[in-house]
Length: 72
Image (cartoon, rainbow, N blue to C red):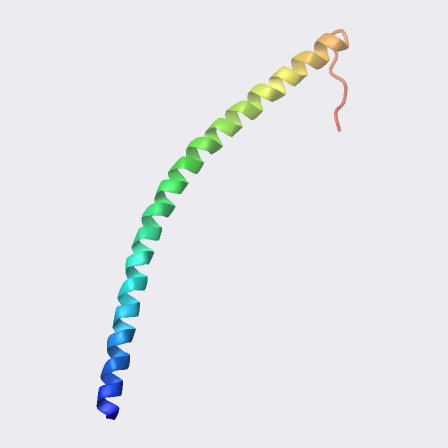
């Protein structure tokens, strides 16, 4: 009886381990896809940030006759 129980526990543990490893492989692939998209978005955010800073400076110069006032 004890041997049957040990074999059953081993079999169930093996199945659970296999399922977890399969899920982990999918998660790794999903993670790689998400990281690729985040890198693309990050580049766009940096570009937009630079353009926005230039645009704000342009407005400040126009409003103050060519001098940029201090910003907080």
